[in-house]
Image (cartoon, rainbow, N blue to C red):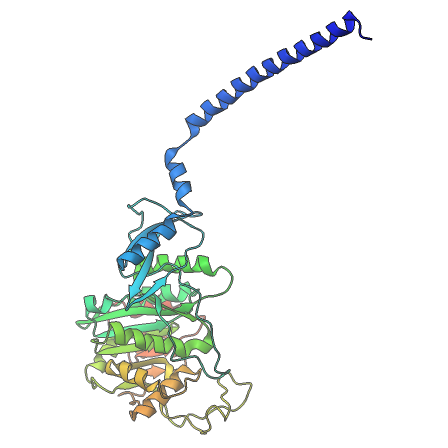
Length: 411
């Protein structure tokens, strides 16, 4: 049986609990209000709007663009960098190509820190189309490739007499910079306009996304990159060459001449212009022309072709890939021939096969000395008598160019 003292003790205990809870509530409320006040000082409405837009802005913008069926551009700011780039939705010929956007943040800012030329079509291309190999010695061409970095208006704007096209690997900045700093910098030679472009495929190894962003910046700066969505590798040089012809036919068909030249070559542009002043404007292709080139049957050879792929013992006449020149009408004709000739992986031989299909033989150059496959030891006199020569890796092409381009007699 409980006594009065027990009852009082329980009442006091309950009362103390009530006071403790009330005191705790007051303290918690004070702290909570303080936190709210602090948050109100630091809270940024634009940040909130920016953050809330991340998950929906891209989808909404693409939807609006699809409804309008136009090709607008959007400013894209990298999360982990300061460069502002351009993404574009292309709608051409009823087909829509949407670029893949990864690790980027769409913003509402309309004033970009980098102004992107209208010639740039995409920042980062979609992955290459699934490659269906026709075998180890053939390449997948013709196929539905397209340009992911393009310069479609350059020929129309500059109206060049000759276009120089240099195939180069995406990561080979050094060769591109050397070419731009030497013979590739000559844009007006003997009153003839000369244009330069580099041909690239896609790099698909580690760091491919970062590399693609760097290529886009390089293209924005120099406006001389042409990149298509095939894998850039040695075996696909034939695809790269055919995409070069596709670009010329689509965007540069009015140019009288074009030249494909490797990035490790030394080119004497004035001598090239002089030669072209006296050459045909149609059905013309020249360079270091190989006659009765033997098909290599040794499986250890870099250029091995088995008999079941090409049964004849000799190739038709073809110009070696180190550098060859052609009249622009041949671009369309060779593309047409490619529909009927199996594309082997040796790009210069394949052009020769297409030329044979057309019944057009490559022409020997006016002077046998013009194109050199064995590096010519540098001297002003020797180089003044050629058009193009290979170089050694140890050659300082910048130093050679500085000496060769200075005024004064060559010999």
